[in-house]
Image (cartoon, rainbow, N blue to C red; front, side):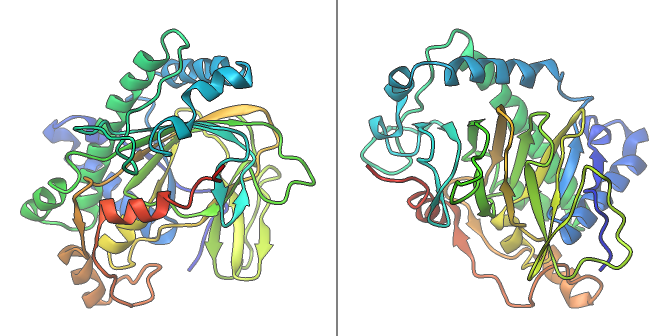
Length: 344
């Protein structure tokens, strides 16, 4: 399979209205999403017609104000105060593949009924005391939740789902158990045994990452041998790996970096690939990923539309041909989050 050095850029604007004159453009967007999910699991989503760039910039300003606070002030909203999932994680508290990640962050999850901090994931979000932080971040949550539903619908069309099939899928994500992080990256020390964030796949549906201007930080793994004749930009080197190669997903103005999570891998029986990625951050900056996830109680199983494609033999994507086992998303998430943080 031929791969380019740069991930595809997909403009979501045709899906922002129901104007019948946009029908052809919407179909083209859906086809592009399908291709990107089969071949990469990653793409740039152009949201310049959906969100004012000043909004996420303001979020990074607020993040900077928080991360610049004295450590004892930041610890007032530490993970240990709640359910060990919601709140502030100090530098190197987040762990990937058994190694400490060189970043600090704050994690927020969908608010739950009858919160109980003794139950994993079932606590209350802890918000910084920085003026305007909570209001601005909650507004971004609502905007990203809406974008998640729009993108899911566009993907359903690209996958060839019927209207009824889409409505069935929609009912599994219409109360998304979303997650949002704000992450502060100091420069990665040369002697650090690990990464700014180690190689991993995301758990759920869609990740919308508002990234900082730092280049060569987010790296995406492409399985297989480097395609012959692959031409690289000077700012986009490829690092060879024994099982594939890494490319940089550098920031593109007006875009969020979007990738699919492991639930899409199950929904499509491996047709769509949840792709490994990592962060090697040499700057001092802030990133805001929003994770649009299934409902906590969603029963995730291979979709008929994906099975039809695989049966037709037209496109096998990145899957191995092994049937994916259904999961209940909340159970899957609980098992993953329990290994994310270093314990005191």
